[in-house]
Length: 109
Length: 114
Image (cartoon, rainbow over all chains, first blue to last red; front, side):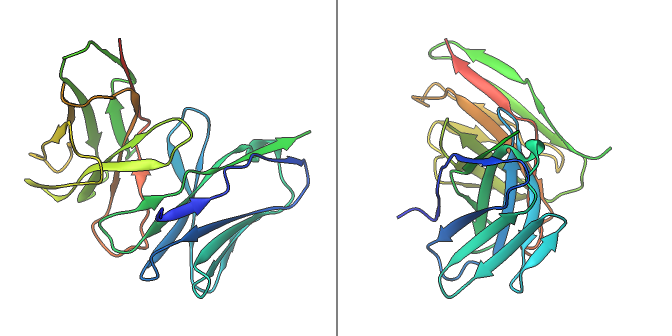
């Protein structure tokens, strides 16, 4: 079983739409969670950390559900520039971070 | 500006050749990592180092070697023993503290076997 699983998508949404991605993880001892954004043929860049109480950064909201072992990312008012692959990252300790395969988002005009 | 520099951006390797990928950071981060990304797949950990002169194997270390002689530098050698080296290689670093700190990545090296 993979450490982290994501729906690969693509999610095709119009500009202005709200879209949500989920990511499930297998290790219940996981301690830290992150969402990264990766543009085509570029390196991943940290989008936001995910805190136990949930957190928001502008149009982006991240949630953690420890009981069901998933994290989510909600994007409101989608922009064309949000088109990218979103990677879920989980770490059970501080030595290894496990990456999901990513969810591709296409925002259409 | 602080950051991680990977070089070269593109690298072509002949069969049976060893090649070394460079990774340098000026973020004063203790921990450094090498990942490999194949199309449509997640990142897989090759090696990591939490302190100078020490490193650990990741999930796919076979056919690779590393050194950590300086805090700023963590070069990766792809040896001829690596059967399928064509991939996008990413170096990352982070402070060696609690897990609230995510990775900072370099811009990557694309390695192709010709």
